[in-house]
Length: 182
Image (cartoon, rainbow, N blue to C red):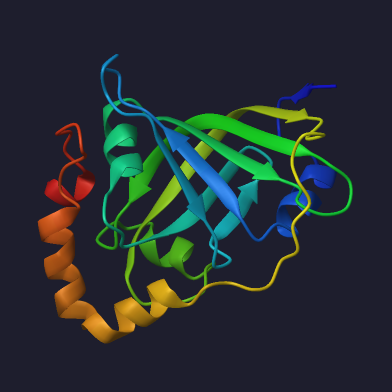
């Protein structure tokens, strides 16, 4: 059932390209720290090479992934087929955060939709690619992307978004510093 690859094959790249939703998992080193799992959409995932991926990260109520990456780099992405043939795909890797002040920002940012509230880009070097059957994943029909986050960020404006990030995104829920706090 499960298959393991050293890189994202062309077939798996095509599978990723058809997905409207992916999940990002990360965790602190502390055994009592909180594991984070976040759903993502809005066409924000890109395959940079068969062993490197990135996603555009928008401002949210927390910044757990970025804090965990700064501490230990561990990250997992998961894609599930909710229609057609069942499949679960996990990408395991070491990640890092690219901020708008980084020299790499403009070359990466140009690959994504220009969305209000953009906070950072998460990049990961993929070490393990694993598929599993997905037989237990229910069938769902895609209806479209929610625009709530985009509407919220547009309403706030750039200055209020920056203030929000300073208030809510500098520390993880476990007190770990994020790259925004440097």
